[in-house]
Image (tube, rainbow, N blue to C red; front, side, top):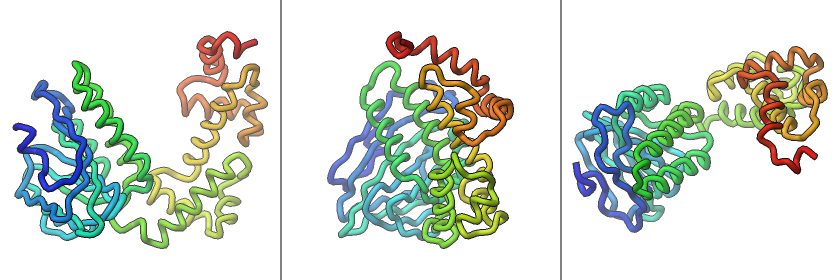
Amino acid sequence: MAAKDLFSTGVQRARRFYLESGSTRADLRVVCGGWERCSSDYEVRRDGFPMFGIEYVAGGEGDLTLGGRPYRLSPGTVFSYGPGVAQVIGSDRRRVLDKYFVDFSGRAGERLIADAGLDGGQVRQVAAPERISVIFEDLIVNGLRQTAYSGAICAAILRHLLLALCECAVPFGTLATPGFATYARCRRHLEEHALTVRSLAVAAAQCGVSEAYFCRLFQRFDRQSPYQALTRLRMREAVRRFETPGSRVATVAAAVGYDDPFHFSRVFKRVYGVSPQQFRRVRARSAPVDALD
């Protein structure tokens, strides 16, 4: 299929790429992608699409009918389509759509779309919109390079995009609910106080909710328990502190909230696959000479 058959008309500006055909048996193959600023009369009507497509609204507003169901598009909305999924996409006349898109094929993409809750033509919202925009921009930059490696690089970036959507996409309409607002407040509190919070019960109380509700919020909106979120925040800070030459395991453990350095070491290895001592040795070998003086 030629690029002209895939790219929409009725746009004011666009940055788009089309990759030459690779192996049709590839586990994941990016066909095209880009960014579009729609015109006020932008409208796309399709009975289906020959491959998988994902579109992400970065700005403006519009209307979408997907599989016969209507949705109002706004920044942070992400939706998918594919074979047999009818779609009508239109832009608001005053606040025209800015949107990213990527079209692809392959069984790996199909699996990851399903993991993100976007299979069969679904609409979701993104809790971390800037993160998704950055990934799309990286995809466009590499797609436009048109080198011998562009296809493989874009496929890797698409995997990154789909995994990020697995992590931060939530059901459509969620972002406006009181429950999500409470979760966002609890998540922010955990991020700001990860090194000093002594228990989940204390963190929940500081946020003004019960521990049971605190846990349900994270399971619903974060796809992980608050304990897992807290552990990852602490381990991330531990890695940062290990960047300092001469840092000691016991000192770092205490600084990130672990009284027992042996327990800290077990958790660190479970998260990163290596012990703190192994991590420090690797970092020391790769550090600049003047950083070790």
